[in-house]
Image (tube, rainbow, N blue to C red; front, side):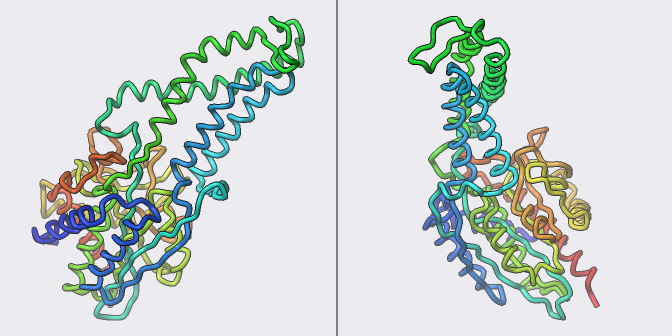
Length: 424
């Protein structure tokens, strides 16, 4: 399908307007709410019906709340190493709890620790564009309105090579503490007083050979662990132009196009979800509420599409243990090939497994039993992350209209393909 220059212009202006009017939009913030109301007004211009739906969430839990709790558990764990039997094992217990929290909250999204975090109200906005004939199928296109807190590690004003090495040593601190705690506990049982190098202090501290082995490298390992926690957190909220107003903008642009060029038998739903950055909570709320719309549908999630050099189609989400729909992936590839045929200079494309820390709203569609996948534009050349990810440089002026044009073209072709498959 031909992609008129007015389409990427509209997407760019969509991103620019929200950034200038509302700025950073953290989950459950007033800026997020107002931005979604603005998007609804925009959707009203070309959708047959529009909706704003609120839901409750805990904005400070994921991911930075998880990291901070991990920092507390890891930060106090070393204090138990010098203690007498059996208290030295508490160091290993702290590390075990840390790993338990990270695995269940970050990867499995259990939200068992939400009781420690204040509740907030977020929202989703979505609109429907009806076909000219009977509804046989639906396509859901969505990005997300909210933006993330800056992560110091990936902020592009910082050197990224040295911190990564320090981060690795920080992770080593956790492993080393757990091993030495268990080793001292077992040694205290099997060997007893022969390990003791100093008399017990206040009946609680028992200094042994193992304590020397632990605390000499501790002076290097522990500061690196603190730097790890520091690097994975940050208080400033980014503008989120690429991540992910670009996805919402592409959904809006494609919706606007098909409002003027109606599909025959596919109902198109365009959406901008809230609270994606805190564990895909907007998509989860939407999927849980709208099984009637999702029963016969494809979820085509649009993630960080404003700049970069490689279009990536997600096949497997290793972080949340999800395999995306082969049906959706096949049609995205066909759509890309159609666009590439018409525009030979189009962005390159790859597909495959996501990095261990990569995910999107699409995982909630799969978890709900529906068919979905997502696309993302990475920086390319073996760099499997989107440009300006969780960085203060993620501003609207970094958006590339050429990239937006290619992604809009792929998305237009995808929707058209699905409609052709369901024509009478």
